[in-house]
Amino acid sequence: MSNTGKLTQLIVEFYEKLSSWEHCVVRDKGLTLPQVHALEILGAHKALRMKELAERMGVTTGTLTVLADRLEKGGMIRRKPHKADRRSILVELTDQGHALFKEHDELHNQLTRDITVGLTDAERKAFAEILEKLNQEF
Image 1 (tube, rainbow, N blue to C red):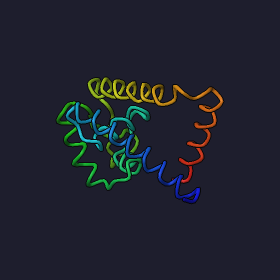
Image 2 (cartoon, one colour; image 1 turned 90 degrees about the horizontal axis):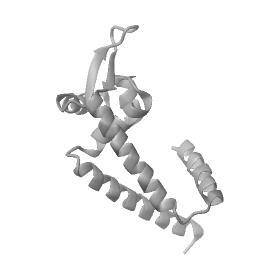
Image 3 (spheres, rainbow, N blue to C red; image 1 turned 30 degrees about the vertical axis):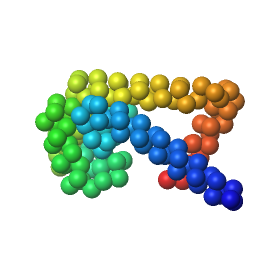
């Protein structure tokens, strides 16, 4: 098997394991993966315009509207008019949404600690640098 083939296999295997973990964690909260991704983005960026949130999620504004309706109904987010742009709506986490974001973020931190426990500090640093480069390619 070529180096590229082996690397492809490893990336796919890692993605599948990470995806499976994420689905299990999300399912326990009664939310969908896209809903949790929206909460993660808002937790990291505070309030965003609906259009900005849709772009960061890689979905249409129509898709986001349906998702936001459900999150708002569940008390996770609130929408409010943008002060400087009357045509825009800002979306932000409620206290309940922020609490869920913090809880989910800590699960991610624990996962990172768990999967990197066998790495040296130098390997963790190199891994972070490689991930930064890979993320720039997306």
